[in-house]
Each structure stands twice: as C-alpha cells, then as structure tokens.
Image 1: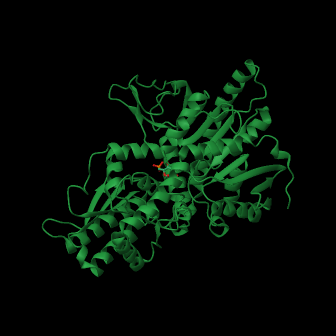
Image 2 (image 1 turned 45 degrees about the horizontal axis):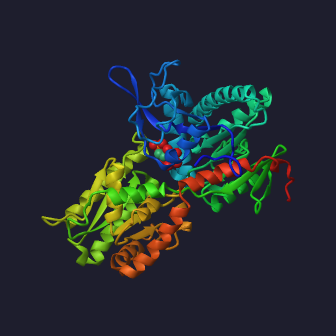
Image 3 (image 1 turned 60 degrees about the horizontal axis):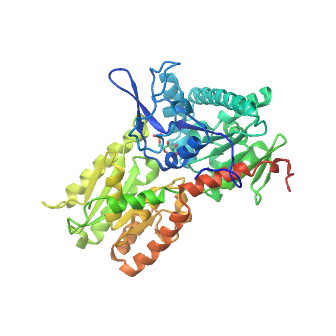
Length: 503
Ligand code: G6P
C-alpha cells in the first residue's frame, strides 16, 4: 500500500543502493535489457517508488554504458514488481572497472563485510581501496544530488515548497555517501530528509576501532537524520561507537545521538519477507524430494559465504552420522550454496574447502543408492526453492554471524503442511526473535548433531505448536511492515530534531 498521510512520508522517495532493483543486461545486438532480481526488498520498495514518482539510484553493473544511454522501459508482459518503474525513475551509476573492483571487491567485501561480521582476521585494511570506496560513494552522492535538484524543482513548480523529499540509503556499500549529500545540501540550501538502513550487523566498539578510518564511517552514518538497524544490539553498538570514538552526546534509552548540533534518531527495525508470496509459491510448487523418496531432507540454503557457518554445519552432519548410524540411508543433507563474490580470495577458498569436505564425507558414508550430502552450487528458481522449503523435514540455519537471515523466515512461511523444524543460530539477527526454533551454537559441533537428532524425532504436535507461532510472527512482521515502519519513522522526524538530549 502507498505510504501517505498519517505516519507516512507523503513525499517523493529517492532510494540509493549499490545494486539497482533489476539487473541490466547487454544483448549481443548492443541493446540493453532488464533482468528481474528476486529479492524481497525490491518487491516491497519498488511499488512505493512507483507510487511516489520517486527514483532508484544504483550501480549499472556495466562498464560500457554511455553517459547518455537510456535504460529500456519494461516489457508489456513484465510481471515483476519493478515493471511499473519508468526508465526515467532509474538512475544508473557508472563506475570505471578498476575503481569498482577496489570499491566493491576490495573495500566492501574485503574489509567491511568481515569486519562488520566480527571476523577481523579476514579483513584487509588498505588505504587505496578505502579511498576508492569514498570516491565511489561520492559518485552515488552526486547522482542523488542531481535527482534531488530535479525533484525539488518539480515540487516548487507545483507550489509544494514545504514537501521534503526522502533519501533512503542502503547498506554498508554506501556508508559515506550521506556526508557529501548533506554538505552540498547545506551549501546549496537543498531540502530533504536523509535515512539510512544497515542490512548487516553493526559490531562492537572493540571491533569497529580496528578500522583505521572508523571516524569517517561513523560521521557518514551520522550525516543522516534517521538510522535503522535490524536489532537493538546493533543500535547500541553504533551509539556506543559514536560516544567513544567521536565523543558524541548520546541517549541510549531514547536511541539518540548528537553531532554538531543535530540530533540523529536510531531505531531497531527487523526486516521481514514477502510472507504471502512464499505461502503462494509453496501452495503452487510441485513436490520436490520428500514425497518421492522415503528419505528425510535436512535443508541448508545460503550464499556461499564464510559467515554462514557452512563448514561447521557439514561437520555437525558428519558427527550425526557417526553417532547415530541409524540415519544412514534415511536422511540426506541438501545444501544449496549460491555462488557469491567469487573474485574475493576468501570466497574461493571456501568453495574449495566445501568441495573437498563434501567429497570426503560422501566417500566415507555413501551407499550404492544413497549419498549423505546433496550439494548444489548454483542458483535455483523461487518455485524450486519454495518446494524444497515446504518439503524439508529440518532447516539448518546456522550462521556464525548474520545481520538478520531471511532463509529462516522463508522456511517457516513455506511450512503449509506437515511442519518441519527450524534449527537456528543465536548469532543471526533472526535468532533473537524466532524463539520457537531450536537454537544451537554453530561452533558446538557435538551439540549441533544432538539438536539435529532431536529435530528429526520431534513429535508432530510439538512441531505444529512451534510452527504456528513462528509463522504468525512472520506474517505480521513482513517486509511491507518493515518498510512502512521505516518510512513512518522518517515521516515522524519533522519537529523532533530540535528536542534537546536528556543526557
Ligand atoms: C547481503 C548484503 C546486501 C547484498 C547481498 C548480496 O545481503 O546486505 O547488500 O546485496 O548480501 O551480495 P552482493 O555482494 O552480491 O550484492
């Protein structure tokens, strides 16, 4: 539903994210084509951008795009949520290949990803990739300012001189964009509200301070008026860093930070999934494995990422087979690993480690008609995914650290009959809310094996009781609720900025 009037923003929305809401593909004949991307965020946010005649700014994904080259309009048959986005509402940011490599593979994924997941030993700190990061953030800022000037001109011409456009910046790829946006807005007297949402964890001060330019990250985030994180722990870590690194006055219970006379509002807003869409997919999907074989499926679905705890998970499954040989030929671990960031060394090493480990375990336990682990290294369609979710007896969601984790939520949404059991790590944002899951520390391999054993034996009644609660929560707090809450918080900012801090 559009966000307007009470609690909404009732103003044009400028979304800024590293990726555009669809992929731009260059055909052999040189023409451009839109390719759908399936994320829940896009499904929720695109309709609001469409309704408010807003814009979406993101990396074009192409190195050969000409500055004046037009984005194609959507195909008349396009059913994607982005179909209504006009080409004029999409602003591609073009980045030189070497610069993008340093920004994205170097700084975003080589430094911030491990650091913010509290794995500093994997992080590389380099001045040149950090500089590239700042320059690329400035390109995003420049594109945002161009769009803002145009939108303000239109508003002024319509006499809407009080309307404040909302700029919504997403994630760790764009920490410093708001610094430049705010500076230029101040210089040129451009009016807007700036909001930021971080989709990954925010680490403690002890970790954050390892990054040599941490002050600039904090200042970049604080250049916004409103900042959202998934859970309260991340909010408190952020506030603590602002206090200790920048000496800001802060109000921890009111979630406020003061910088240079401005008050920045911080809030926990746990993201959800397009719940109804997954229910419908699960209802429509053809049977996958469970109904055709007498083998129970334990399912894992992840981007191939070292934060996801894949190695620990495979070892826990091996331990299960060692300890409880009765599962041989009765249970299969189906692991879907989606290739990700394959240029970064850590990801390539993990791929090799997984290949070897799975080969070893399959070699150790396989029978002529059964293998313990089925491993898919690739992408699968949403329909196939929903069928797997629906039919799996157990879902293993055991990240070592994860901002939220949507797989846990998608799995419960798809449990429309004979409910399975969700096993969840407490180190995912979702772990703090999905109380009816079986919670297990992924580092404790033995314990993990025991919990899988328990899940495989759980009586129907208990599975149903747990699943009803889990599903109910996700149904109410779906991705639309998350988006409405973010925009409502932005809408409510108006006069609060002048409030003094209490501490
Ligand atoms: C995480 C991040 C997103 C990112 C996604 C996929 O969910 O929070 O910002 O888009 O991973 O990673 P990629 O590097 O392929 O964009």
